[in-house]
Image (cartoon, rainbow, N blue to C red):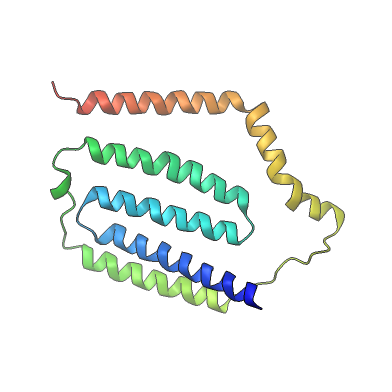
Length: 171
């Protein structure tokens, strides 16, 4: 009973942190702070994945979104001029905020009304193998068979960063 209560408390803390950080991303004036709050939101989603026993998705979330995209956004923000004054409010901001609140309400309603059937502990052989062995097989494929694709993607990202740096450097 106490373990279930602890898990529920952790879930609600993660959910509130994730939603709060996401709302602050669109509300704060500073682009740099918005990018940092985006990282907090991504980490909260990864924590929820961990609680749902989706460790592979959590690691992918941290590596791809926090490690790659959010850091790239922070680099882009740091390389822009006049960072403190570049995220000013627009007339569309209240409409976007109201739309976000409506979407949050619809998602909350869908989550509350859904029937959450958990998988039983004694799954049949082939189905159990999918849930147990798939992350290990994906890891082997990504590191062994498709490593060239990752190296090419890394080279493209490096070229994009070098191109972005060359575009914004002082002449």
